[in-house]
Each structure stands twice: as C-alpha cells, then as structure tokens.
Amino acid sequence: MSIDPVSKPRTKPAEERRDELMRSAERLFMEKGLEQTTIEEITAAAGVAKGSFYLHFSSKADVLLALRARFVQGVLDGIVAAVAERQQTDWRGKLAAWSTACATGYLDAAGLHHLAFVAEPPATREGLSRNILIDHLSELLAGGAGRDAWSVNDPGFTAVFLFNALHGVVNQPIGETPADRAKLLRKIEAHFLRALGLASGID
Image (cartoon, rainbow, N blue to C red; front, side, top):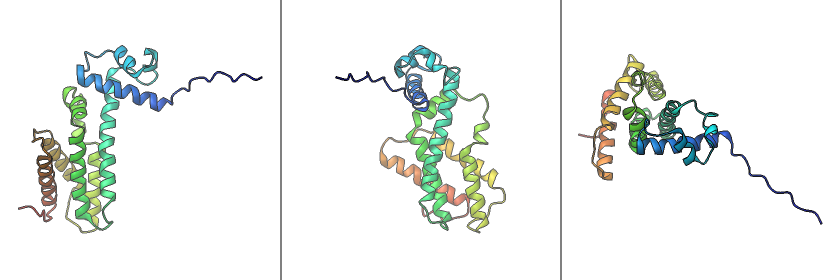
C-alpha cells in the first residue's frame, strides 16, 4: 500500500506577493498615514514574514512610489480602452473619451490619489508637466492635428495645459450623487472640445 506524499504549500508568485503587500500598505496608509504605519503592520496584514517585505521594497517610501505608479497606470489603462472604442477617424470622439476616462479614473480612485499625491506629495511637481497621461494626450493631439481634426501648434504644451486643468477640477469638492458626477464629466468634456475649437454640444 502506497502512501501519498504530503503536499507542500505552493509559493505564491512574486508579483502576487508584491501586490498583496501594496494592497495592505495602501489600506494602512489611508487609515493611519505613512509615518504611523509600520512595516511589521504591513507584512502582518499581508500574511507574510517581515523579511519578505525587503524582497520587494526597500522602505515604506518605496511602496508609496509603487502606489503612485500603479495609480497613474490604472488611469492610463482606462483611457486607452475608452479611446480604442472610438472609430479610427473619430478624433472628436477620441478626445471626448480621453477627457471622460481620465476624469473618471481620478474620481474612482480619489482616496488613493489623495494618499499618493496630496497627503504625501512628491518631492517635485514634475509629474504635472511630464507623465504617461500627458504623453498619451500629447500623442492624441498630434495625431488629430496630423489628420486636420483640429489645429494645435504645440501638442505637448496643450496636453500639459489640458491635463492640469482637468487635474485641478477633479480635485475640487463635488456633489456625491451620480448626477453631480455626470454633470462634472460633461463640463470637462465640453472644455476639452472647446479648447481644440470643436463644438461641445453644451451651451
């Protein structure tokens, strides 16, 4: 009679373990703040040994950098998906989709954005003049200009201008109802379109 070997627990992939640490840190940072949260609390919440933390991060500040990057990438993923749903030649629709998806990404993750960029602001403000969202918008503006969808002399400058306008608006207090959000998204879209000399459809 053979005896089945005892199954060993499977080790989680590194990316999954890293994600668990980030999710635990995000929750604790939002509840207690970066300085008040300890690495021991993060690892305990993630169910890992303290030493595992240093396989993925060098410090709590390093985790915060990763949370910032994940936030921005998440917003960009939503933008790319929304723009891709538009017809190839529908530049007006692409621009409208860009503005709505970007604003929605910020609103949906307002808590994480506040934690990563407001409560613990970056050392410099470079992110407001150069980031992957601005780069994507600049490419969209240049593409539309190349197809005579609108006239833009400096897509990079215009992208920074529009992004910072949107960024400022979504960081302001708004009503909590779906109607309040819908109204804000319509206004943001209208201003993006008007900035490119396009009809907004809103009086």
